[in-house]
Length: 203
Image 1 (tube, one colour):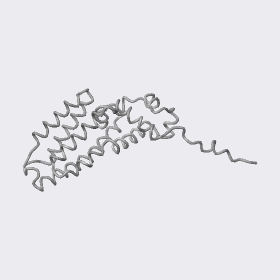
Image 2 (cartoon, rainbow, N blue to C red):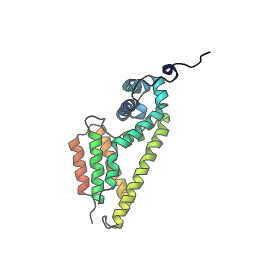
Image 3 (tube, rainbow, N blue to C red):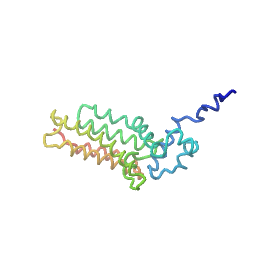
Image 4 (cartoon, helix red, strand yellow):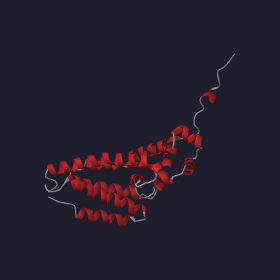
């Protein structure tokens, strides 16, 4: 007796582009945060059903992690570029201008996905909050190391604490993200960048 099923039945290919669907999910999470993005919001934006979402991406938490991976790869390339700049001031400027471009791009939601999701406070989002904070901590360590090198090389004054100057820059970046999300204009954020550069410690 013939038991083989037709190929179309045994292994029917997905009828949607997973890359496009993930990009759509990223847009929803970026706009609404992890908690604010409902499964209905996600499936509608992705153009798929819930069973298809689960089959392709797992649950909502796993989908967010994949979206966060995409965000870091596509939207945060400026971070690595900034760390390669020749001076601490240039590092700070590249960080801020990269963040400014990312947070105010007309085709994307304003603000920062990491900041939006790190302030989530519900029980459901606690693991997500920890994930976002852990990823951010890795980047912070690299920036502290870069500022330490700048001080060792005499690019930063000897009295400057690498941890403190990194914390200061992160506070500016996070403040920019919050303001961008609240509707601040690009011009307003550019003034904040320029002011920060004016008070940046010099040798």
